[in-house]
Image (spheres, helix red, strand yellow):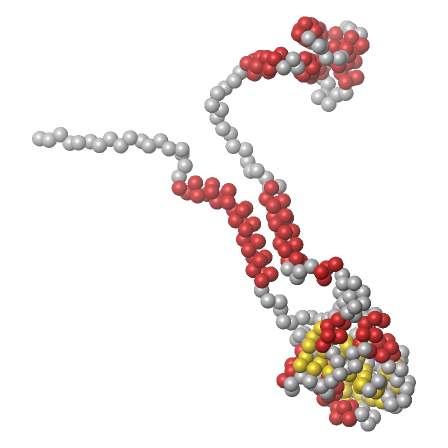
Length: 400
């Protein structure tokens, strides 16, 4: 009969961790750097994406909203008109010229230099809601302070071909003819063109200047109403090129005029990089300022007694001849224990501690102050004498 063989597997003593715990620990260490890296990558991807082709700017050719003019711009493009949307007068000077049309939307951001640059382009002008610029560009037309600003149906009542083709439009505002050769159309209901109208046209220095007092006929919301589309398309589509100019806040003026702003001298990618850097700084500050978590107790490999620590520190003070540090430690200990014995708080000021100890020990306050806050000793003998005196003082306080 054979004896069975028993295999004894010795216990393997490891570091007490498992694959799951090690994975969790590694994840806790790497989650913040990985999160920061993911944010930087996401910001880079977003910055690399093409800019949206739509906007919310009033009467912008890329605005599909009610107050935009994308419908008119697309119709003109399908009819063969090269529509160029610009926000700076320098681009207008580059693109505009004889045989082109410049549409100017609003004049509240225009300066005198920009108006002069518009007058020097020799292109036909279509001014929409640009009253004061109109008076600076031609003496034959001016904006009237009266009239209704609310869009209303108005008939042409003039002989201008574009106005006659439109028949009636939905618009408000009022323009006046102040010189020869100017024609005003679309007056308020019940009045004549002598009192002003929403549309005016004049010839100035061999070019055609058209003014519309209201933006309503150009908007997507009202383009299909009455004869708005006919008037807008005929006014803007006379030439093969249309420069659609809406002034902007960062328009630095005409070319060769004022100096460019410092921001325009920087590459376009600088704002994106600055935003990414700001994001990195915020994430790094949050990462470094987070809580460290709960405390974890750890067994000390060696237990050092308090007496041994005190003697070791004393030997270091003696070897370095640090009489002042040793004396300060002795005095601080005596003052703290004596104050606690007398019921004083740890934040008690020095004069209060000296007064309480002097009354308890029956000594003069000056002697107690010299012991606790006097000058440091300069040799071993002075330090030893100070230690004895402090011990006697503390024993006298404890006897009370």
